[in-house]
Length: 319
Length: 311
Image (cartoon, rainbow over all chains, first blue to last red):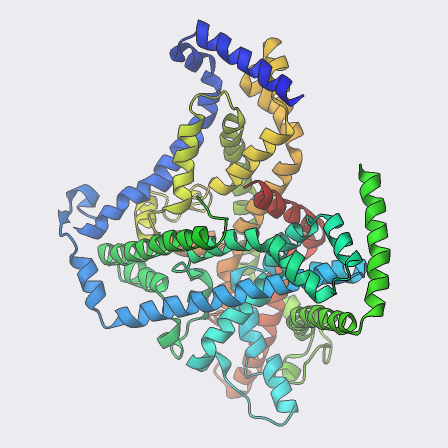
């Protein structure tokens, strides 16, 4: 079957190659080109356009003079960012927050998937999967709303329980040292079920014969998880890990921004929210573009390092 | 084949059961598994039930901290007020518009890109693939994108909500892979021998055969549109264009829309009422997703699987 298709395709190819020039092929495929024209134009304008716009980081940009008319100023804004007193704090907040969410957001779905894979009660398994998957569909705005209400000191669930047990109410969102934990664990709450799906898929692909023979050999359940289940999801884990390391500097701007208040700004200001405030609230376009570019470059370097390490250590890598 | 696998599986289940009851360590292990699953279930459910219970409670009970997982002094005043608020109505209407229009544009663009890329004999295939893939790793960033949208004159128009994210490259790749592996090339050869052009072929053959993946894509895009507030925050200025998420943000996070009554007694009452309002707003804001969830869940999982296995 397969070879048959290849055969016909190959003969077709040789026929076209012999009889027609590339120009004629292009003419014959004009409908395909017409189709892809719109997406290509879209990508050129809305993905490559802003990439060209990065030059404003090296210019003294003003809306009036436009990108081309503005003066070149080189690395002035990069130097300005690196020497601001905020720099160290921003970098630390960004890196700590994303490393923390990376670790927690990575381990919890794996544990959930392994546990779901072990249970024999299909109804229970389906229920757990359905319930834990649901929060993924909640929008960021509503999610932050839920966090604020749940931890509220005026009738929030946690404080109600604390009061019931005779404790003092706590203003969770006002305590800087609590902020990261709230951000990360609410993220786990929302993303755990979604993250588990992909591992469940990988686990269901384990050859039943391997499991059967391991049972015959008297392998215990914990051993089976360690020697069969975990190795079988390892390639998926590696790829996802590389991808998320490449995103380490892209902390979810939307949620961080909504969770900020004056009391927690010391730990909650990250590079992307800083870019937004400087660029679109204070209209310092060039400076904030430079900060954004710095962020992307660090990100890309991290991606390359992660990929190189993964290739050394294991077999899977992105390229 | 399928029957064989089923038999093997049923044998497996039996052996597992036997094994499970014989060993103490396995018993402890299963206990651990059940503890993990039950705690995951409870931890996810508690906040949802709490919000739901509070939204049906009285404002005074909420302020006094008497609400846990069951409504106290049951009433629906919060909901009654929400359905009278015009901002929420307008926001709802705008969100429906952006989601509908945006998703239609998304699907058209995704199909227009995915079909030619699925054709192995398409001349520009590798060039376009590279052109698209690069954008998954590099982007201009927030400010250059904003400046572009601004120079295109899209600020504060409906277009800013649907054009800048008209297509997601990742979704194009998944759709392309689906078409490639599910619609045989011979079908095209036959059709083209009969004189069928590419446009006609896409409309008559590809779209009907790719319905499952189109459904998955429509869901992914639609949920994205419905839940996003970021583009609206960047590009929209006038209130009459605000989508629901911006209205929700103003109520839930910025505590807006309360007014400022003069006398102290009414002020307290209003304050309490604003607590209640937030709970019912959360429920109303996620109601469309809650209703759709049971139906869309399996398509979503399918979408993740295709993306994971083929991507």
